[in-house]
Length: 390
Image (cartoon, rainbow, N blue to C red; front, side):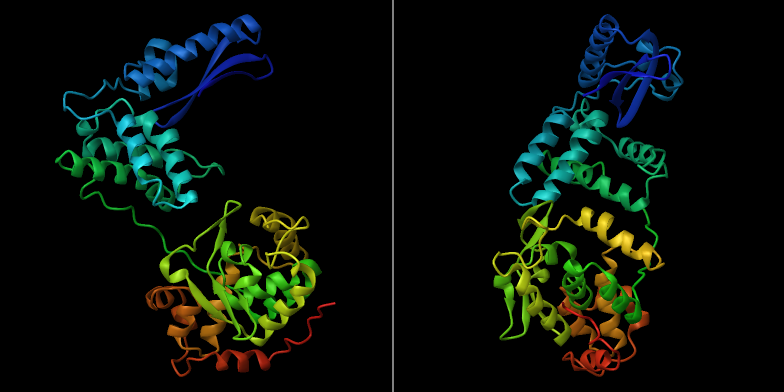
């Protein structure tokens, strides 16, 4: 839904709406009064009605706007006997929501409602062509992200997922060629990992707030994903057999199943992890969660990053790295110590070693061990006993 609001030192009203997937803001000469707001709100309602019906002409409303030349008249595509894109997109969401995780569904809903329907909503789905899809994708390249930088190829590929799914399903259902057929993903630059050294790990674990010390130790020495450690329950910690069972993860404040089938796994505790978890029982054993905030709820990862993690790195004059680098750090330390890549892959929840070799190849010195003993020897060579649990 668009809006009418004042802008600038003269409080002139602006009409703010979305058209063809882009945010449009048109300045008027009307000052901010109740009467003028009411007048422009009526105009905005008509604009959005025309957009929904596929008859919106930008230049008819804003003839002197720079955007009027950029937006060519796009008549409603029809005459194919197929439903409108907006109707089929809603049906696609409804039919598939039971098989998606909540976070995936919410992501697709945002893409469909905020980007795809404003752009393709008035098209009959059978009239959408490959050229239309490529034009939409090209428009994404020209847009800016929150940091005012061009949207990255990986983000664009992600935003194309819902469109690809909708058009592929429509092609199958209505026995027609898919408009996304043979449209390849944009090549994405390789993402370099930036793990911490063992000395940096031990420094961070010593200097972090005491109430987060065990949390950080377990993150660094198990390689658990953020949602896995934040959602870890005591019932999945088995001290007798020395394993942590990954059976749940927290996503957006709610418990969900792990990311993939291979993410269901048992992580072997090192002595350092066992000691940290034993110490943690003193603080949270009365509840279900192993790690929680001050009121016993899930740790909100953005709060951890802003209030604990980032200030700690600044105070220690360490280069900023995402908290997720704790997972990469665990992988690189295991591999650097000589652990078998297959064992490491199982610890991380990978199906096989393909991703391991692709991401961490330079950290793999040999394939001589497979049971975790090499890593324990590696830790024993460093002073990892100096962390106090007081």
